[in-house]
Amino acid sequence: MNGCNPSKTSIQEERMPTYHYRCKNCGYDFTKYQSFSDDPITTCPECHEEQVRKVYSAVPIEFKGSGFYRTDKS
Ligand SMILES: [Zn+2]
Image (cartoon, rainbow, N blue to C red; front, top):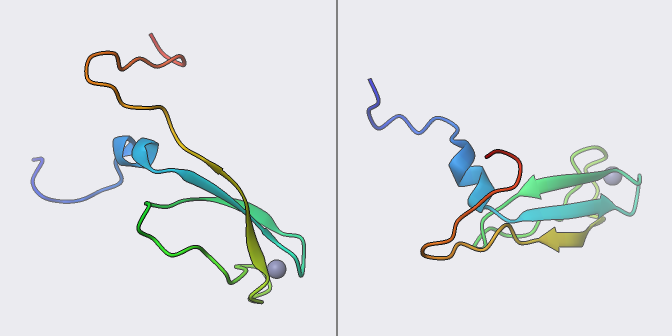
């Protein structure tokens, strides 16, 4: 049975850019997978203060038509 149940697919996560946030209030830092259209996180999940800043963002591997390769598995 693989119907339309949108269970977590790792493929989808790989396509999502990773954003790194850090809370200026408590120092908590975390990474978050978000799509390009998602709003940036501003509220800290730890202290719930709006002191979170995006400190780093990484775009995943570029998807090219014929040359998708990955380095972790062969
Ligand atoms: Zn915090």
